[in-house]
Length: 406
Image 1 (tube, rainbow, N blue to C red):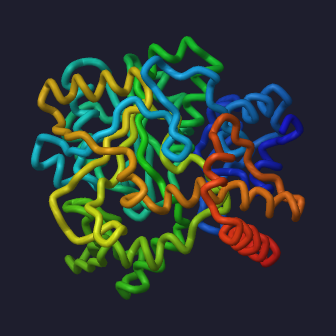
Image 2: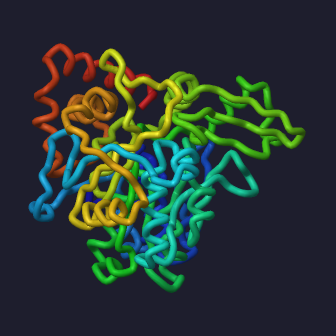
Protein backbone atom coordinates (compact mmCIF):
# COMPACT_ATOMS: atom_id res chain seq x y z
CA UNK A 1 0.00 0.00 0.00
CA UNK A 2 3.07 2.25 0.08
CA UNK A 3 2.25 3.73 -3.33
CA UNK A 4 -1.31 4.71 -2.36
CA UNK A 5 -2.21 8.38 -2.50
CA UNK A 6 -5.36 10.17 -1.39
CA UNK A 7 -6.64 10.17 -4.93
CA UNK A 8 -5.93 6.45 -5.43
CA UNK A 9 -7.56 5.51 -2.15
CA UNK A 10 -10.78 7.22 -3.23
CA UNK A 11 -10.61 5.87 -6.79
CA UNK A 12 -10.10 2.31 -5.50
CA UNK A 13 -13.26 2.49 -3.39
CA UNK A 14 -11.28 2.18 -0.14
CA UNK A 15 -12.43 5.47 1.40
CA UNK A 16 -14.85 5.19 4.32
CA UNK A 17 -15.35 8.95 4.57
CA UNK A 18 -13.95 9.19 8.11
CA UNK A 19 -12.00 12.41 7.55
CA UNK A 20 -8.62 11.19 8.84
CA UNK A 21 -6.97 12.61 5.72
CA UNK A 22 -8.15 16.11 6.70
CA UNK A 23 -6.23 15.73 9.95
CA UNK A 24 -3.23 14.08 8.26
CA UNK A 25 -2.67 16.88 5.76
CA UNK A 26 -1.72 20.46 6.55
CA UNK A 27 -4.66 22.51 7.77
CA UNK A 28 -6.73 23.73 4.84
CA UNK A 29 -5.24 21.27 2.34
CA UNK A 30 -8.10 18.73 2.31
CA UNK A 31 -11.80 19.04 2.97
CA UNK A 32 -14.71 16.61 2.98
CA UNK A 33 -17.49 17.11 0.44
CA UNK A 34 -20.57 15.17 -0.59
CA UNK A 35 -19.96 13.54 -3.97
CA UNK A 36 -22.47 12.74 -6.70
CA UNK A 37 -23.27 9.39 -5.09
CA UNK A 38 -24.20 11.02 -1.79
CA UNK A 39 -21.06 10.05 0.19
CA UNK A 40 -18.55 12.27 1.97
CA UNK A 41 -15.21 12.14 0.18
CA UNK A 42 -11.96 14.08 0.62
CA UNK A 43 -11.03 16.73 -1.90
CA UNK A 44 -7.46 18.06 -2.05
CA UNK A 45 -7.51 21.83 -2.42
CA UNK A 46 -3.94 21.83 -3.70
CA UNK A 47 -1.29 19.29 -4.68
CA UNK A 48 -0.36 17.29 -1.59
CA UNK A 49 3.31 16.73 -0.80
CA UNK A 50 4.82 13.34 0.01
CA UNK A 51 4.88 14.02 3.76
CA UNK A 52 1.13 14.59 3.68
CA UNK A 53 0.53 11.54 1.50
CA UNK A 54 2.60 9.43 3.92
CA UNK A 55 0.52 10.61 6.89
CA UNK A 56 -2.67 9.88 4.97
CA UNK A 57 -1.51 6.32 4.28
CA UNK A 58 -0.48 5.96 7.91
CA UNK A 59 -3.81 7.08 9.38
CA UNK A 60 -6.31 5.87 6.76
CA UNK A 61 -8.44 3.00 8.14
CA UNK A 62 -9.72 2.17 4.68
CA UNK A 63 -6.55 0.63 3.30
CA UNK A 64 -5.28 -1.41 6.26
CA UNK A 65 -6.06 -2.31 9.87
CA UNK A 66 -3.75 -4.16 12.25
CA UNK A 67 -4.15 -5.45 15.77
CA UNK A 68 -1.17 -5.50 18.15
CA UNK A 69 0.62 -8.72 18.98
CA UNK A 70 -0.36 -8.31 22.63
CA UNK A 71 -3.64 -7.01 24.06
CA UNK A 72 -4.23 -5.60 27.54
CA UNK A 73 -4.04 -8.07 30.39
CA UNK A 74 -7.39 -9.77 30.78
CA UNK A 75 -8.40 -9.16 27.15
CA UNK A 76 -8.96 -12.17 24.92
CA UNK A 77 -9.49 -12.12 21.16
CA UNK A 78 -12.61 -13.80 19.85
CA UNK A 79 -12.26 -14.68 16.17
CA UNK A 80 -15.66 -13.15 15.33
CA UNK A 81 -16.25 -10.54 18.03
CA UNK A 82 -12.72 -9.20 18.43
CA UNK A 83 -11.01 -8.12 21.67
CA UNK A 84 -13.22 -8.79 24.68
CA UNK A 85 -12.55 -7.62 28.22
CA UNK A 86 -16.14 -7.54 29.45
CA UNK A 87 -19.51 -8.18 27.84
CA UNK A 88 -22.88 -7.23 29.28
CA UNK A 89 -26.38 -6.08 28.38
CA UNK A 90 -27.96 -3.09 30.03
CA UNK A 91 -29.12 0.48 29.68
CA UNK A 92 -28.68 4.01 30.92
CA UNK A 93 -30.02 4.30 34.47
CA UNK A 94 -31.64 7.64 33.60
CA UNK A 95 -35.02 6.86 31.99
CA UNK A 96 -34.85 9.89 29.67
CA UNK A 97 -31.38 8.97 28.41
CA UNK A 98 -32.52 5.37 27.92
CA UNK A 99 -35.52 6.48 25.86
CA UNK A 100 -33.69 9.02 23.69
CA UNK A 101 -30.82 6.66 22.82
CA UNK A 102 -31.02 4.20 19.96
CA UNK A 103 -30.17 1.11 21.99
CA UNK A 104 -30.91 1.74 25.63
CA UNK A 105 -28.66 4.77 25.91
CA UNK A 106 -25.65 3.02 27.45
CA UNK A 107 -23.09 5.00 25.43
CA UNK A 108 -24.84 8.26 26.28
CA UNK A 109 -24.88 7.19 29.92
CA UNK A 110 -21.14 6.55 29.83
CA UNK A 111 -20.46 9.93 28.23
CA UNK A 112 -22.58 11.80 30.77
CA UNK A 113 -20.77 9.94 33.56
CA UNK A 114 -17.37 10.94 32.13
CA UNK A 115 -18.42 14.59 31.90
CA UNK A 116 -20.06 14.82 35.30
CA UNK A 117 -17.14 13.14 37.10
CA UNK A 118 -14.59 15.42 35.40
CA UNK A 119 -12.76 12.61 33.63
CA UNK A 120 -13.22 14.51 30.38
CA UNK A 121 -14.06 18.08 29.50
CA UNK A 122 -16.03 17.45 26.32
CA UNK A 123 -17.07 14.85 23.76
CA UNK A 124 -16.33 14.92 20.03
CA UNK A 125 -19.20 13.14 18.29
CA UNK A 126 -21.88 13.43 15.60
CA UNK A 127 -25.38 14.85 15.61
CA UNK A 128 -27.95 16.06 13.12
CA UNK A 129 -27.01 19.39 11.64
CA UNK A 130 -28.93 22.28 13.17
CA UNK A 131 -29.13 24.05 9.80
CA UNK A 132 -29.52 21.06 7.45
CA UNK A 133 -31.37 18.38 9.45
CA UNK A 134 -30.90 15.61 6.88
CA UNK A 135 -27.12 15.82 7.18
CA UNK A 136 -24.68 15.31 10.05
CA UNK A 137 -22.21 17.58 11.76
CA UNK A 138 -19.39 17.03 14.24
CA UNK A 139 -19.97 18.75 17.57
CA UNK A 140 -18.30 19.24 20.94
CA UNK A 141 -20.60 18.37 23.83
CA UNK A 142 -19.80 19.37 27.39
CA UNK A 143 -23.12 18.85 29.23
CA UNK A 144 -25.74 16.19 29.79
CA UNK A 145 -28.15 18.22 27.66
CA UNK A 146 -25.65 18.31 24.78
CA UNK A 147 -25.14 14.54 24.90
CA UNK A 148 -28.86 13.80 24.89
CA UNK A 149 -29.37 16.18 21.97
CA UNK A 150 -26.89 14.12 19.94
CA UNK A 151 -28.30 10.73 20.99
CA UNK A 152 -29.69 8.34 18.40
CA UNK A 153 -28.27 6.70 15.30
CA UNK A 154 -27.44 8.77 12.24
CA UNK A 155 -27.62 6.57 9.14
CA UNK A 156 -25.96 9.08 6.84
CA UNK A 157 -22.37 10.08 6.01
CA UNK A 158 -20.30 11.64 8.81
CA UNK A 159 -16.61 12.55 9.07
CA UNK A 160 -15.87 13.17 12.75
CA UNK A 161 -12.11 12.60 12.43
CA UNK A 162 -12.00 15.70 10.25
CA UNK A 163 -12.85 17.68 13.41
CA UNK A 164 -9.97 16.21 15.41
CA UNK A 165 -7.63 19.16 14.83
CA UNK A 166 -10.28 21.58 16.12
CA UNK A 167 -10.87 19.34 19.15
CA UNK A 168 -7.18 19.30 19.99
CA UNK A 169 -7.09 23.09 19.73
CA UNK A 170 -9.57 23.28 22.61
CA UNK A 171 -8.34 22.95 26.20
CA UNK A 172 -8.94 19.77 28.14
CA UNK A 173 -9.41 16.05 27.65
CA UNK A 174 -12.12 14.57 25.48
CA UNK A 175 -13.79 11.33 24.48
CA UNK A 176 -14.15 10.49 20.82
CA UNK A 177 -17.27 8.70 19.57
CA UNK A 178 -17.58 7.41 16.02
CA UNK A 179 -18.17 4.56 13.66
CA UNK A 180 -15.69 1.66 13.85
CA UNK A 181 -13.65 3.08 10.96
CA UNK A 182 -13.57 6.52 12.62
CA UNK A 183 -12.33 5.03 15.89
CA UNK A 184 -9.77 2.87 14.07
CA UNK A 185 -8.41 6.03 12.45
CA UNK A 186 -8.09 7.84 15.78
CA UNK A 187 -6.44 4.77 17.31
CA UNK A 188 -3.88 4.87 14.47
CA UNK A 189 -3.28 8.56 15.05
CA UNK A 190 -2.75 8.09 18.78
CA UNK A 191 -0.40 5.16 18.19
CA UNK A 192 1.68 7.32 15.84
CA UNK A 193 1.53 10.32 18.19
CA UNK A 194 1.50 8.88 21.74
CA UNK A 195 1.45 12.35 23.28
CA UNK A 196 -2.20 12.58 22.20
CA UNK A 197 -3.26 9.66 24.42
CA UNK A 198 -3.55 11.96 27.42
CA UNK A 199 -5.81 14.32 25.47
CA UNK A 200 -8.05 11.55 24.08
CA UNK A 201 -8.32 9.01 26.91
CA UNK A 202 -11.53 7.31 25.74
CA UNK A 203 -12.59 5.97 22.34
CA UNK A 204 -16.20 4.80 22.08
CA UNK A 205 -17.94 3.17 19.13
CA UNK A 206 -20.98 1.16 18.13
CA UNK A 207 -21.62 -1.80 15.90
CA UNK A 208 -22.11 -0.56 12.35
CA UNK A 209 -23.67 -2.30 9.36
CA UNK A 210 -22.34 0.31 6.94
CA UNK A 211 -22.79 3.95 5.96
CA UNK A 212 -25.75 4.63 3.65
CA UNK A 213 -25.57 7.30 0.99
CA UNK A 214 -27.71 10.41 1.32
CA UNK A 215 -29.74 8.83 -1.45
CA UNK A 216 -31.12 6.42 1.15
CA UNK A 217 -32.41 9.30 3.26
CA UNK A 218 -34.00 10.92 0.21
CA UNK A 219 -35.67 7.63 -0.69
CA UNK A 220 -37.30 7.61 2.76
CA UNK A 221 -38.53 11.14 2.10
CA UNK A 222 -39.95 10.00 -1.24
CA UNK A 223 -41.91 7.29 0.60
CA UNK A 224 -43.19 10.04 2.89
CA UNK A 225 -44.03 12.17 -0.16
CA UNK A 226 -41.99 15.02 1.29
CA UNK A 227 -39.50 17.42 -0.27
CA UNK A 228 -36.14 17.83 1.46
CA UNK A 229 -36.46 21.61 1.66
CA UNK A 230 -39.61 21.40 3.82
CA UNK A 231 -38.08 19.08 6.43
CA UNK A 232 -37.03 20.79 9.68
CA UNK A 233 -36.36 17.65 11.74
CA UNK A 234 -35.29 14.15 10.79
CA UNK A 235 -34.58 11.16 13.02
CA UNK A 236 -33.52 7.70 11.83
CA UNK A 237 -34.47 5.95 15.09
CA UNK A 238 -34.31 6.40 18.85
CA UNK A 239 -36.93 8.04 21.09
CA UNK A 240 -37.92 4.47 21.87
CA UNK A 241 -36.38 1.12 20.91
CA UNK A 242 -35.67 0.58 18.15
CA UNK A 243 -37.66 3.74 17.48
CA UNK A 244 -39.15 5.11 14.30
CA UNK A 245 -37.65 6.98 11.39
CA UNK A 246 -39.39 10.33 11.64
CA UNK A 247 -39.55 13.45 9.46
CA UNK A 248 -41.16 16.70 10.58
CA UNK A 249 -41.94 19.60 8.28
CA UNK A 250 -42.05 23.34 8.72
CA UNK A 251 -45.84 23.10 8.47
CA UNK A 252 -46.10 20.65 11.37
CA UNK A 253 -46.57 17.47 9.32
CA UNK A 254 -45.05 14.36 10.90
CA UNK A 255 -44.34 11.13 9.01
CA UNK A 256 -42.92 7.93 10.51
CA UNK A 257 -41.60 4.57 9.37
CA UNK A 258 -40.68 1.51 11.42
CA UNK A 259 -37.02 0.57 11.82
CA UNK A 260 -37.26 -2.72 9.93
CA UNK A 261 -38.65 -0.94 6.87
CA UNK A 262 -36.36 2.11 7.00
CA UNK A 263 -33.13 0.18 7.53
CA UNK A 264 -34.07 -3.24 6.20
CA UNK A 265 -35.63 -2.25 2.88
CA UNK A 266 -34.21 1.19 2.08
CA UNK A 267 -31.06 2.42 3.81
CA UNK A 268 -29.08 -0.83 3.67
CA UNK A 269 -29.44 -0.86 -0.12
CA UNK A 270 -27.37 2.31 -0.39
CA UNK A 271 -24.15 1.31 1.41
CA UNK A 272 -20.76 2.57 0.24
CA UNK A 273 -18.35 0.14 -1.40
CA UNK A 274 -15.79 0.10 1.42
CA UNK A 275 -18.42 -1.08 3.89
CA UNK A 276 -18.95 -4.25 1.85
CA UNK A 277 -15.31 -5.20 2.44
CA UNK A 278 -15.31 -4.36 6.16
CA UNK A 279 -14.03 -6.82 8.77
CA UNK A 280 -14.51 -4.36 11.62
CA UNK A 281 -18.21 -3.66 11.84
CA UNK A 282 -18.04 -4.28 15.59
CA UNK A 283 -15.57 -1.53 16.58
CA UNK A 284 -12.55 -3.65 17.46
CA UNK A 285 -10.32 -0.63 18.15
CA UNK A 286 -12.60 1.09 20.66
CA UNK A 287 -12.41 1.04 24.44
CA UNK A 288 -16.14 0.43 24.70
CA UNK A 289 -18.66 -0.54 22.02
CA UNK A 290 -22.42 -0.22 22.23
CA UNK A 291 -24.98 -2.08 20.14
CA UNK A 292 -28.53 -3.33 20.14
CA UNK A 293 -28.99 -6.20 22.57
CA UNK A 294 -31.99 -7.41 20.64
CA UNK A 295 -34.32 -9.89 22.23
CA UNK A 296 -34.20 -13.02 20.09
CA UNK A 297 -37.16 -14.60 18.38
CA UNK A 298 -36.82 -17.91 16.50
CA UNK A 299 -33.08 -17.38 16.23
CA UNK A 300 -33.42 -13.88 14.75
CA UNK A 301 -33.59 -10.41 16.35
CA UNK A 302 -37.04 -9.22 17.32
CA UNK A 303 -37.49 -5.59 16.27
CA UNK A 304 -40.74 -5.04 18.17
CA UNK A 305 -40.84 -1.83 20.22
CA UNK A 306 -39.66 -2.35 23.79
CA UNK A 307 -37.65 -0.66 26.54
CA UNK A 308 -34.16 -0.05 25.19
CA UNK A 309 -31.45 -2.60 25.89
CA UNK A 310 -27.82 -1.98 25.03
CA UNK A 311 -25.01 -4.38 24.41
CA UNK A 312 -21.99 -3.08 26.35
CA UNK A 313 -18.70 -4.53 25.12
CA UNK A 314 -15.51 -3.35 26.82
CA UNK A 315 -12.48 -4.12 24.64
CA UNK A 316 -9.60 -2.69 26.68
CA UNK A 317 -8.62 -2.33 30.30
CA UNK A 318 -9.56 1.34 30.03
CA UNK A 319 -12.98 0.39 28.72
CA UNK A 320 -13.57 -2.22 31.41
CA UNK A 321 -12.67 0.22 34.17
CA UNK A 322 -14.98 2.85 32.68
CA UNK A 323 -17.91 0.42 32.63
CA UNK A 324 -17.27 -0.63 36.24
CA UNK A 325 -17.02 2.98 37.41
CA UNK A 326 -20.22 3.95 35.59
CA UNK A 327 -22.08 1.01 37.14
CA UNK A 328 -20.79 1.88 40.62
CA UNK A 329 -21.86 5.49 40.12
CA UNK A 330 -25.35 4.44 39.04
CA UNK A 331 -24.97 5.85 35.52
CA UNK A 332 -25.71 2.57 33.76
CA UNK A 333 -27.24 -0.74 34.79
CA UNK A 334 -25.93 -3.99 33.33
CA UNK A 335 -26.27 -7.75 33.58
CA UNK A 336 -23.98 -10.50 32.23
CA UNK A 337 -24.45 -11.45 28.60
CA UNK A 338 -22.99 -14.73 27.25
CA UNK A 339 -20.82 -14.15 24.18
CA UNK A 340 -22.34 -17.14 22.39
CA UNK A 341 -25.69 -15.30 22.38
CA UNK A 342 -24.22 -12.65 20.08
CA UNK A 343 -24.58 -14.99 17.11
CA UNK A 344 -28.36 -14.88 17.41
CA UNK A 345 -28.82 -11.14 17.93
CA UNK A 346 -26.07 -9.85 15.60
CA UNK A 347 -26.17 -12.36 12.69
CA UNK A 348 -25.14 -9.79 10.08
CA UNK A 349 -21.94 -8.87 11.90
CA UNK A 350 -21.02 -12.55 12.23
CA UNK A 351 -21.67 -13.29 8.55
CA UNK A 352 -19.83 -10.27 7.19
CA UNK A 353 -16.60 -11.17 9.01
CA UNK A 354 -16.90 -14.81 7.98
CA UNK A 355 -17.32 -13.75 4.34
CA UNK A 356 -14.46 -11.25 4.07
CA UNK A 357 -11.89 -13.70 2.68
CA UNK A 358 -14.29 -14.80 -0.07
CA UNK A 359 -15.01 -11.19 -0.97
CA UNK A 360 -11.30 -10.33 -0.97
CA UNK A 361 -10.55 -13.28 -3.27
CA UNK A 362 -13.17 -12.04 -5.73
CA UNK A 363 -11.55 -8.60 -5.67
CA UNK A 364 -8.14 -10.15 -6.29
CA UNK A 365 -9.45 -12.07 -9.32
CA UNK A 366 -10.58 -8.78 -10.83
CA UNK A 367 -7.34 -7.06 -9.80
CA UNK A 368 -9.19 -4.76 -7.42
CA UNK A 369 -7.41 -3.44 -4.35
CA UNK A 370 -9.00 -4.67 -1.13
CA UNK A 371 -8.25 -3.73 2.51
CA UNK A 372 -5.48 -5.51 4.41
CA UNK A 373 -6.37 -7.00 7.80
CA UNK A 374 -3.66 -8.26 10.16
CA UNK A 375 -4.36 -10.38 13.27
CA UNK A 376 -8.13 -10.43 12.75
CA UNK A 377 -8.30 -14.26 12.68
CA UNK A 378 -10.12 -14.12 9.36
CA UNK A 379 -8.94 -17.64 8.53
CA UNK A 380 -10.79 -18.96 11.58
CA UNK A 381 -13.89 -17.00 10.59
CA UNK A 382 -13.78 -18.20 7.00
CA UNK A 383 -13.39 -21.80 8.15
CA UNK A 384 -16.88 -21.58 9.64
CA UNK A 385 -18.37 -21.27 6.15
CA UNK A 386 -19.21 -24.37 4.14
CA UNK A 387 -17.46 -24.74 0.80
CA UNK A 388 -20.81 -24.08 -0.90
CA UNK A 389 -21.34 -20.84 1.05
CA UNK A 390 -17.77 -19.65 0.41
CA UNK A 391 -18.19 -20.19 -3.34
CA UNK A 392 -21.61 -18.54 -3.29
CA UNK A 393 -20.19 -15.40 -1.64
CA UNK A 394 -17.19 -15.43 -4.00
CA UNK A 395 -19.37 -15.65 -7.11
CA UNK A 396 -21.87 -13.12 -5.83
CA UNK A 397 -19.11 -10.60 -5.11
CA UNK A 398 -17.50 -11.27 -8.49
CA UNK A 399 -20.80 -10.58 -10.26
CA UNK A 400 -21.24 -7.31 -8.38
CA UNK A 401 -17.69 -6.24 -9.21
CA UNK A 402 -18.21 -7.12 -12.86
CA UNK A 403 -21.37 -5.02 -12.91
CA UNK A 404 -19.62 -2.17 -11.04
CA UNK A 405 -21.87 -2.56 -8.01
CA UNK A 406 -19.03 -2.92 -5.46
